[in-house]
Image 1: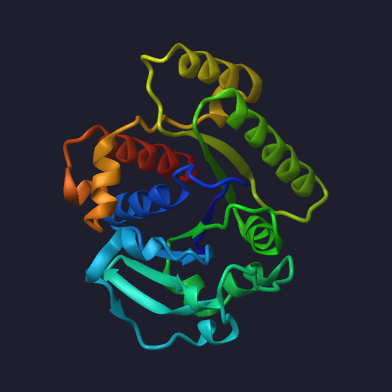
Image 2: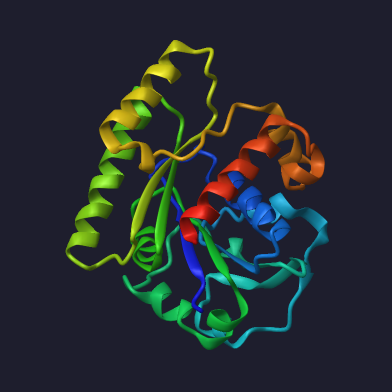
Length: 248
């Protein structure tokens, strides 16, 4: 059975894309799902989310055709990471729209992983478009504010048009509210607007604003390892459960 390909994307930075990929991968691993993470953001922050526990994996043949990765690494028996080569600098690599579609069809990936999680750059360039084209489902993390809503709306519409024209193959596009403080009237109002505008089934369980998420990243750990009882750990557990149920 081919792996589920989940792309976490937003056209702006600071929207918890990397935090989401790190902690969702960890929760999937707890459920004994075999996870491959592709870090397509040349800042390479995915590596910081797992810290010094990473060990090199003998060079996979499928990596040889993709120069944007510096290698394949293992966090535990359930999580492998293709880490971004940060030496390539700020300029995006030239990739074709279906480059990652072809990459993920490699037999080593098809037979070894249950889920592929893709962290993306915060710009609507060739790399992000190629990642979105490869997705089975697209998750757009965003803080529930009016300005963020505009960006979500534009990305969601662009993805929907690409799916309708068969340039993208995703079957689901969902919004993930992040950094949510339900004591803030603005956040509550925006969340209601999202549900009304996009539909309840397109708005995923919210990730609350929680300092433990930032602390865990500074300690180079998934939050469920650093503070398993905190709100952030519980929220990503709930998110994983929701995605897993939909997936099934």
